[in-house]
Length: 307
Image 1 (cartoon, helix red, strand yellow):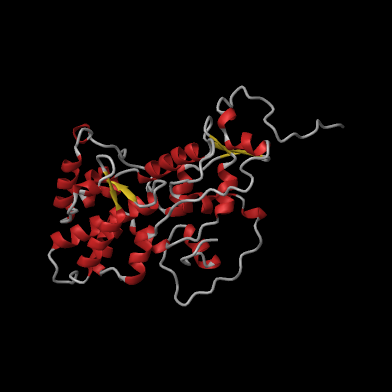
Image 2 (cartoon, one colour; image 1 turned 30 degrees about the vertical axis):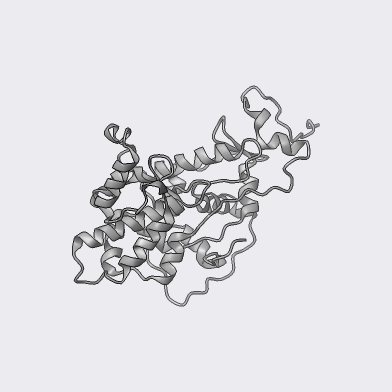
């Protein structure tokens, strides 16, 4: 029985309407071969946590929100060659990776299993009343919820994006004052500031690597309600959007929750990976952690530098 020759080019462009601007078109003619996508990542939260141990009162609040699992999993060393190879095969028309073995994609269940973010819940959306906020109104809200307001309102990018560096400096100034006798209001200020670092630097980073959207303040107002939202959907949708932008043209930067993409690839194609070395642990890990934690522990990817 004869089989038709396998050709790496698309057999039909009927569905691939964006192929002319896709990275694969440039690679096919010999361009972008040495260009590895990168992220101007600033690990503000991880660097802060390395030098500052969270008080149990703060940990309790973070556990109630459901985001403490991200901190328990820890920092992941990123393999930008792997991430680039995946994004070069991402199709924005279908939101799937087009691989020789077929099409595949990251699902909501993958996010829940790997990183423990909830699927069920309310949509993460900005209320209509906040969509016309000015920069001053966002800063007023920031001051009310975190007790922090930059001295210069000009630090805002657009109307709603703020640099992460001043937020981290504010956290460092507050840290030593967090004790068992600290008023609950101050602990809430501290927790919200830390979550802003997490949102802007880990879960929803942009290509600048150092900005967070103050639109998240709406969801941080009632910390007890954070677990009621489908953050799984928000993180995955944002990652899809960033990969769609990164796979087009000559872009060099990529944003989004890259650790999710990398761990998903490892899990999805585990049968093609070499055997993992034995786990070397000083102490037993916390129970019921999402599966992403095993990659951090077994491969030692919590280090500060990148692959």
